[in-house]
Image (tube, rainbow, N blue to C red; front, side, top):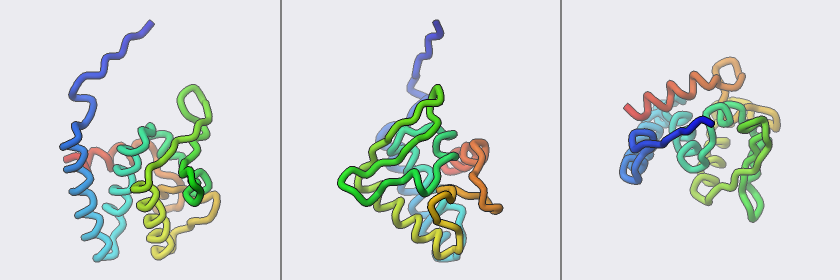
Length: 142
């Protein structure tokens, strides 16, 4: 059986996490005022990843229809998680507010936000690849 050890360099401290989110928020506000999308998308990606524990591939495959943000229990559905399993991931109020705001911003950009639209879409309107999301995460962490 394979043993995997998580060492300190594999995760962010609370201080590092807060600093990363503050930086992304600042850059997103600047991009928003200049009608740019890069850091707005990146901030949503980072915030969602840090608050949900989703794998990159799970984030890449999310659709608007996977988000359930209007009930007493806010959650998203992962359709193909580890070993192909489906699961619900519950979300706190802060990330729910951010997701709702992000979807409204996408509408102002003219991006599709209908039921089957990707949450994170590239220029062609298709889902971002896991590689593109990994690169975005690494750039935010620089």
